[in-house]
Length: 400
Image (cartoon, rainbow, N blue to C red; front, side, top):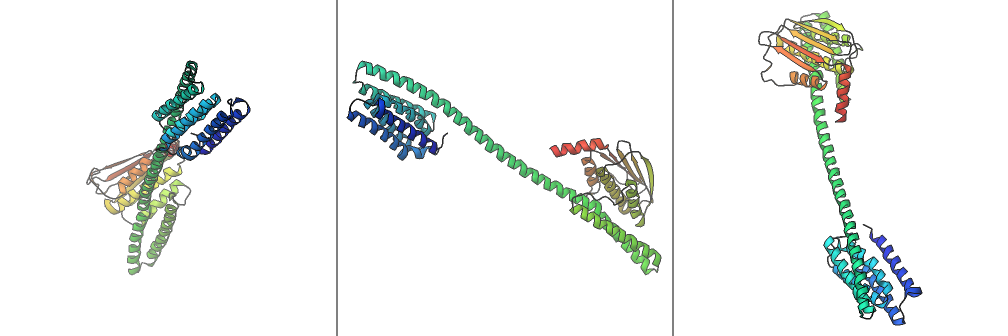
């Protein structure tokens, strides 16, 4: 739909052209008829400016539609009666009536009224003769049919555009809702990630520090100076590791021990738990034929840390064995087996321990198995796919 200023240009230019035509070639015979014809143009323009213009683009038109229609029909009828050339006024009257009416029903009604005014003007201007009646009826019929068809077509286009605009608004609102939900989901996932990382890193490390500090205190009270110094040095190193882990969590990067080699990182972690006392922990190295991706290292080290923490705190084990193997394609397998008290894996349990490990492994596309029974020890197995599978999974998650 044209904006009011474009209708201003259209009505102004059209009215001026008709006035010029009356004055220079298409005017009626007689000064009186010419003045009436010019007055009808002025009447039409005033009706548009004072009544019709304010209704364009501001539905519903209310009282403005019938008033403008009456003025326009009167101007067309009077102008056509005074000068047949002014039947051209209908080229402005029809589209304005459809735009101001704003509905199909009003548009059709306006077309009939304007067509009737054209017929009346031609009939009066022709001297009320049969020929004038036929001419007026023919002109009115063609004009109303054409105007109605054009009006219905334009109305359908306008409605289509409005429907598209509504759909766009709905889609925009839906997209905003999806983005809000995604942000909420992202925040929830971030909270879960931080909870897992804090449990798997800081909480375990701090628990180890408590054990080491208690041991150092006992050694100091018993006069075991060298042993106490060794324990204090271990406390210092573990505390530094905890600081690095905390910084890594804040930076949203996984905290992997500083050694570049995965095997060295595993040995360092095992040594930390050996220093805490309890079960004797043995490392059995399997084949390490490939290179582990950083994400896979993080998962395996966190699972190993959690498993050894469970051995130290809950298993009551005398001996534990850690087995690590890496295939050529980067697929990895971690086993932690102890001879402790065991438990029922299907029994309800709380905390982030096994559930946190299971979720972390699942996010990496792997699987976690826990085999245990009361009095029969525990075996924890983590299997991760190769680097290609993990990369494809990461790409798919970013695409969601």
